[in-house]
Image (cartoon, rainbow, N blue to C red; front, top):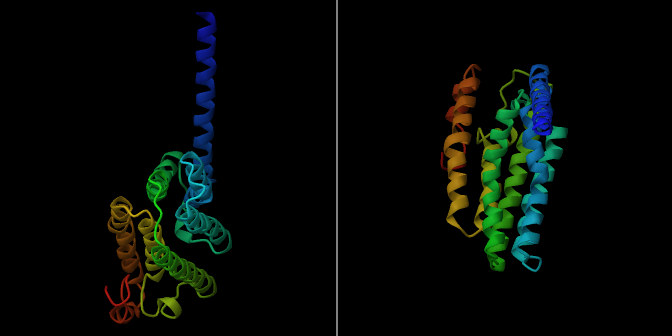
Length: 236
C-alpha cells in the first residue's frame, strides 16, 4: 500500500506541474493558434506515409500521388507560415483550444484513410483532374495570402482591391476549396466531400461574412463589394 500511495502521489505531483506549466504558457501567450495548425500540417506527410505502411500500399500509385499532393501542401503551409504568416492565426491558444484545432483539422485526414485503407486506384485521367485542382488551388491560396501579407505590411489600413482580389474578395478561400476538393475527390468516397461542405458552411463562410463586416469600415468597400464575388468566381 505504501508503494502504491507513493506512486499515486508522484503521479499527482507530475500532473500538477504539467497543469502549472500549461497555465504559465497561456498567461505568457507563448503558444498561438498557428503553432497547433502548423504542427498538424507538418505531420500530415508522416501520417499518410504511416497509413501506406500500415495497409501495405507501397505499390499503389494513387496513394503516392495523394502523399505527394497533401504531404507537400502541409510542408508548403509551414513555409508560408514562416515567410508570410496570416495575422488571424497569431492569437494565443490554450491547450484545450489547440486540441480542438487538431481534432478539426484531422477530419481532412479522412480522405487519406479512406483512399489507402480501401486500396483505391484511380484512373489516370482522374488523377490528372485532381492534381490540376490541387495545383490551381495552392497557387490561388498562397499567392493571394502573399499579396495580402505584403499589402498590409506596406499599406496598413488600406483596402486591398487589386491583383487576385480585384474580382473575388476571398480568392484565397476559393484556392483552399480547390486544393481540398482535389484531396477529397481522390478518395472516391462521399464522406470527404461532406466534410469539405461542412467546413465551408460552418467555418469558411462565417469567416468571410465576418471579414465583410470588418471591411465595411472603409468608405470604398460598398463599391468594391458591388463589383466583386464573395467567394466563387462567376457564381457568388
